[in-house]
Length: 354
Image (cartoon, rainbow, N blue to C red; front, side, top):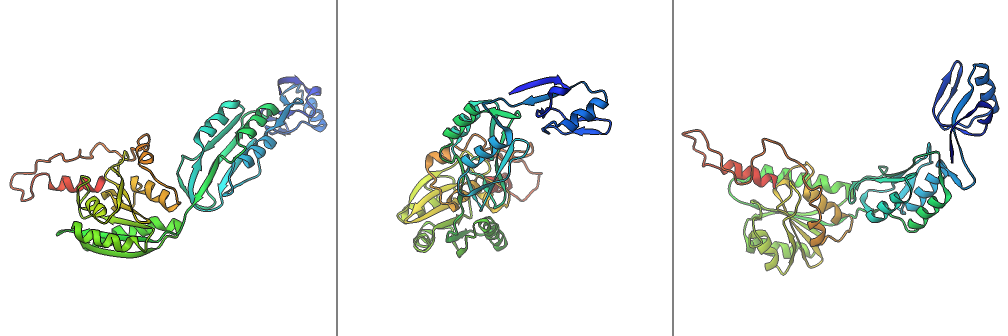
């Protein structure tokens, strides 16, 4: 592509590089110069224009963006009409974004003229949401570079895993002092999280915070549910704690305990028969985004979650931090005469955050 200032008479058929407003004449960036434009500008004393002119082996920005966007997008995405060298991709349905990250990086390394930007991998999106955009930086790109990008994207590199209406069971263990209102709010927050997938809660039970009792109910729910979420009356602190012990006693397996996402550190993921089992961290009682959401959304989209998948979440896994947040298990000295044991409230707060 040729680019630069040219005499006014030599600008016909070229593309205006920068918006121009002189007297009564206005030319927009990207507009093609016509004979009428030249005549009008000449009458106003304009002698030259900054323009871009395509060469034989160039492909215009809109054509290039359109072709590339339609090639990289999977069946669950739609592409709008390219404009000013940009073509956007949108979700046709709700789901979790599926990316070939290495292919995205290779595409962006082909030529600085070609760019592809996406939402982060595994981001939950709703129907109609924009998930990616192709932008051609100059007014044209070489056909060689475009063809290389199209070959790289011979298979879609951006798509969705649609959500599935999984059958979900909820078990809430109780200890003295845990208010029923807390359990009700927790289950409602879970229902709100499941709404994006249309996944129903088919069982909602409370039971003592006891290994044997929990083991028996896990066996029962795993036979009719795709996913069982356990909200413990106290946070899991070890693989031998009540919730993981109940899972293994029931014949299940622990995929991973603990995750490098904060809030969400104390999450347990396992399997029992055909059902996934999540031992929810305390932060899952809150409607705010936390590590529980990341795992739940993948499972709702039918994505297998492995131990390695969870362990790779650390980069970008710090979701919330405030200066006033207490450190885990940090005792707080209470005023003299206080009837509350030292550190009790702090421990409770940290359980909720983890």
